[in-house]
Length: 574
Ligand code: FAD
Image 1 (cartoon, rainbow, N blue to C red):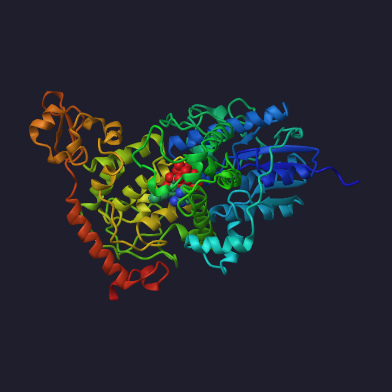
Image 2 (image 1 turned 180 degrees about the vertical axis):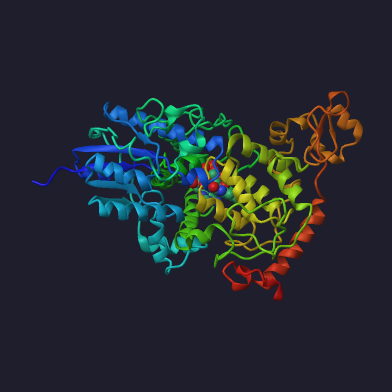
């Protein structure tokens, strides 16, 4: 008889036990042993920007998953091995006498490259690889095929393509038991150090030599803590993990009216405790909640809800998931070019201000074609750190930094303000800040939404700008959101809460906060310990007009990122 399978189940974008087609495929092999594995990938340390809040979220997911695995089999857990998969896995194949490697399909550009490398190495080692999709409702590659081989750039395209693919697969229940892992000794550890730098080399405390081991400081492959990783504590209250995610889902679904009548444009971006949307995005990102499970539970509610106020895509909850599909389907065929303008056939080229202080960090997108604006560097800095002098924008950016999540329309507001509706700075710079601070950061969704908001792809109505004054007033006349996140302004009269610079000096004094300076003064620097909040960094209406005119010109030139003149920086000849 052939030897019984010995399987590595490689967890990546699927930190859950429920509805995991890949995990099911691994268990269907009826393995003699199954190693639940996580390996630290240096890519996410060197190239991706990850702030403490997302790290914490990841560790929450890992700890919860590990505990759930142990519940099903006391001998097992999530084995966190501190080395890059490209070098680690081949060693594990040999050390653990592995016959099969199983993982969830990932269509991100980097992930494809990594997985191809791993698959080739597995083949060379005689290990069979099984890959299953489970991260989206449809396999993005299949969605693209059904869309005529083109990236999905609208919800209608997604809907048409989805029709061809048939019904979304039904969720698979969690396993009731898990096989034992095999022996986990790693005797290669001392003799063959990884040629690829691993996370420990940049994150660990220099004095803590024990941490250089693949198995972690306790030698037991446990999930690291923030302090072991040398990271600052998280500031967000949002917690990750499958247990939290399933509980949150139950709560949402139990509110039938909310679920059946959800309409995204009607949800308030100013609601923060609780927020007005589901807050499930980070769970989807880490795979601690299956999108298919969410989809089917919402569909069940919709089927049984008979009142006329039931909502439909694209504004309802199903519609929200379709937007997610759209961005994955846009990214899948474009690869690395999707996440930048340079070389991107689907992203409009706009000659944004290029503040000299802001060095494009990936080195690909710099060029002589940008209009220089000396103030733009300061604008970018003030936007990022919540000191623009526009309370609505500052409150959102501070919520983002503090909590790692902001409402979709709040994201609209700050993204429009940074790009075509205020600062005229490239969406790429904004997307980098979101990448660092969001707990739900997903390349496909972040990049796609930034392109949408900057009118470089997906959306083109650049004359529709969000006012940082009128927009939040619609749902928050009293300015509670601003008062919470910009506490300097908490005692301002409602009348001035979105435009504090208009308050007479007597009102400013009464509210204990003076409107002056450019955001560089420290709190309490004013006379008598009075707080200080900056003046607006520009006249918004004037900037809006300038931006709209500039966008008009750019649309008229009509270049896309893959145009040779964009690539070589000679677009001015047009
Ligand atoms: P809900 O409104 O409750 O929606 C349910 C689910 O649908 C979400 O959990 C999410 O998985 C999905 N979804 C909803 N809206 C979108 C959308 N517009 N695009 C893609 N998926 C969507 N979302 C991310 O998941 N990661 C990102 O990095 C990200 N970056 C963004 C950047 C900008 C500039 C903008 C404007 C939006 C971005 N979004 C991103 C999309 C959206 O804002 C968030 O998905 C949403 O706010 C998450 O909150 P929620 O879970 O309460 O959403």
